[in-house]
Amino acid sequence: MEDNSVICIKSLGVTLAVNCSVQLVFYAASVLRRLETLFNLSAILTTCACVLAAILVRFNTDSTGEANEAASLSQRQLIASVLLVLASLLQHKKQQEQLKGMKDTLILFTIPWLVQCVWLFTSGFPVYLLLGNITVLQPDLGASDFAGVFVWGIGFILAAVARTQAAAISSDTFVQTGLFRYSRYPQIFGEVVLWTGLFILCSGGIVDSWQWVSVASPVVVLGTLVFITGAESEADAEEQFGYSIDYMAYKESTNAIIPWLPSTKPVFHLLTSKV
Image 1 (tube, rainbow, N blue to C red):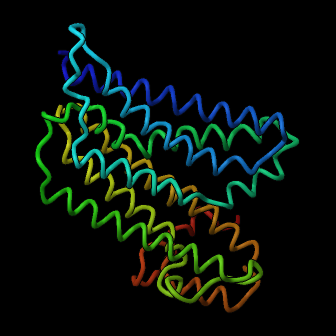
Image 2 (image 1 turned 90 degrees about the horizontal axis):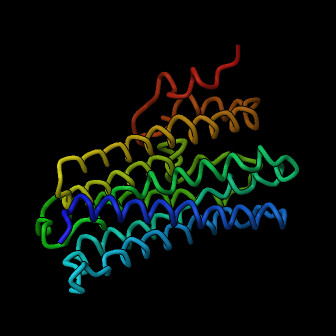
């Protein structure tokens, strides 16, 4: 039977191909039909397709026709797959709404699709890598797995509750109740915690030393959510509510990302201050 690294790399290659192909199909359909409504749906279906592809690759047979040892799924692999699909449901409606004003400019309309394609594979990389590993070579479930699921759960609840609370408030006012009383962007904090928990879970199934490269996934996710998504949200809030004394007081007294910690110097100050 082939070496675990070879099997894993083949699996990652197939998953990457599926990720790009599904996104390309939805992108082409969106361009031809001049639609932006397929953006979030494509992210969910792409994630599902990638997980399914990574699982199906495991059922290939070797040269002797015998079922490959990689065919069976471990509990860790199954749990990680389910959690990744659930995480894909937390899509940013704002990104889809922004596409409405880009439909007439192909280049501008294309950029968010390229970013999403990279994001989907990068954020799901630890899970796809885990699914590529031979089950019998992985350690049994341990403390790190339970910790990862717990951390993921906390993050998912925070992100879901924050989005629900934000959706219940009119877009003409800023949210400062519920979780937003303790953080201006609790949904971003929740997502950072969520993806970190998923990596912790997947790290328990690492077989080869080179696979620790997957630590880059939560690092990239953290940077993207905080310094891109967060900075954009902060700039939009400044533009919409910057004239409000109540908003400025809220901004000065409430931390940007991490709940309960007062912010004397907002984390996005240098990114959003006007020259």
